Length: 450
Image (cartoon, rainbow, N blue to C red; front, side, top):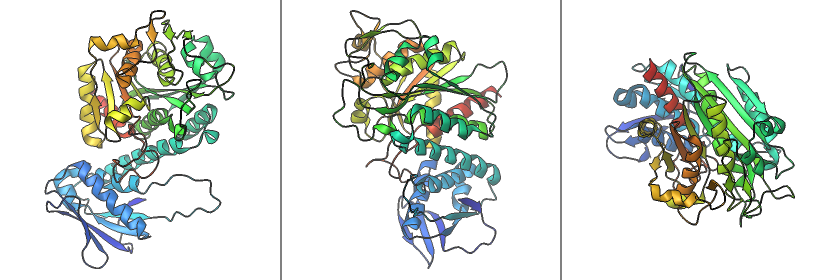
């Protein structure tokens, strides 16, 4: 999609103009599109401008354009070049379809003016990351009948072929033997059996414990007996699982020197004679018992066992979980930012430092001791629902399973799918939220160890 220019004929020329006219795009000379930005733009402004231009050219049914990267590279170097590439590539993404006739036309964006950046390396790394963000979007956009837990495991395993990644898929007999009772309380509600998907990338030193990325993989969420009033969009309740698989595969393809394990508990939350019920008391892999207040608070149940698995079986030194977890965070932050819970200030600071480079936004929720009353139960160790502060309660619930291990919880329920407040590089459908920041977070941690 994005290539270096070797004199090919193009339909349009794209020229960045750093003149302070932020967000303005207009036609210059015939066949030229001017992209106006701040005099010293940041990477996110560049990403948005590039995305707007790419989207406009697609509307015009153009097949090619030449982008002069020099003005941006002069100010931002390789990071600016990466933002130009990423904005265009992500804006041009289209959902896979099952139509008899495919209507999408190919588009080539050529780059010039890249001499002042390590352009080959930047293009290779950015293009790989963009492909995996689009992979996460593809998985999240697939309907439930095209992506059962078994199909999700197969899709991830197939995507990992050719990469130095170890893939292990635990079936229901293996997870049951591990005592993953919370995972099975949800997964046993469906005729489509659950799977625990584990990916391992070992690019770092042998003695370094891995960072665990744990992603919610609810391939469809009916709410169970706490039935949802609307189930449209619930095919995408595995966006967290898609994000962690994509981030790990991008790290592996780019040979980032870090050890990372991705853990994806994949289930469906349906209604059946085997479904769990409100007021049930269930167990968990950690040994903690859980009173069920709502069967629609299922994501935290499967993540609880997955976090325990990551710490006890994968020996994770740090854990990040990511999930489309609560409607509460979507109502609070809309489609702008993801909510965060953290038990380690330095780890949270590293997340924010990574996010400054990716354009993704995160907002830390409070975890005052008083909030812990929300997840107290008179009959079990924990309560899986709450009467208020739903996003905070969900985060604190998961934090109980992380224990003393440095941990971040990312609730992407409002940002996992494009909406009114989404960016120009996030077309309709899944956004791939979290992939870029998880990638950058792990890459930054690798650089710290050098």
